[in-house]
Image (cartoon, rainbow, N blue to C red; front, side, top):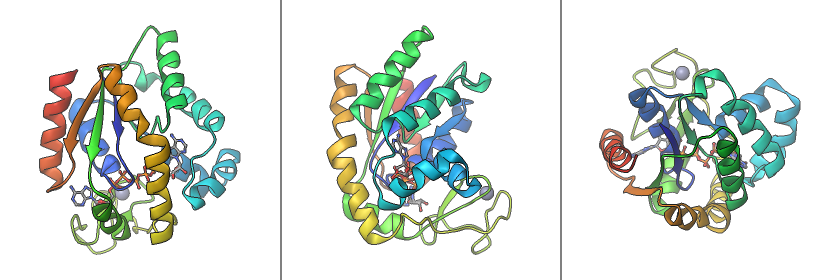
Length: 216
Ligand code: AP5
Ligand code: ZN
């Protein structure tokens, strides 16, 4: 299974990617997580990405595309993957298509998670993330068992630098301008499935699995 999750910041892509990837037995490939790991590790890639991420802008395509190409060439992605946060604009989608065609492969499904903008701001301002495993929580809607600690590895949760209200608003604008056109792009390719990403996390996962199975 080769699948992509598309949706605005805070739609629950990371939350669902973790659950769906386990359910489908495929690796989750999150460009945001890879960038953040590089920023905290102080790598060259992290240095290139940081200023864009802090502003809520997209990291330039040549940097992002090269990183994804490397990641998808790893053995664990040979049989399938779930992309979270990539592609993010039409040129990235074209690049992905070419990358896969070169491997005699193609996408099976693109799942769009729909949620309105006020809900996004609520979700992101209460989000807490695990620096060890990347799992995301919400102080109210999806709280960890022990306050401030990851259920899986007990690491101390942190709040992302780009989850300040003005940066959230800017990320939403970037989504509307640059990422939302992907919905039409993938609809035209016959790959799009759309679900409402509101309600309890487990219900969204059920809807997502049903939509993926129907399409792929
Ligand atoms: P990235 O990390 O991809 O951020 P994003 O797209 O803004 O998405 P988020 O991670 O903010 O939200 P999400 O949809 O994953 O929601 P989550 O599950 O966490 O990208 C960050 C930056 O990296 C970009 O701005 C850019 O600079 C760069 N970048 C990344 N990819 C790139 C690319 N391809 N090209 C160029 N640049 C790129 O959930 C949010 C909160 O809601 C959590 O607290 C969660 O617990 C809660 N929640 C989830 N589901 C529910 C529910 N059903 N009900 C209630 N609360 C819920
Ligand atoms: Zn963790």
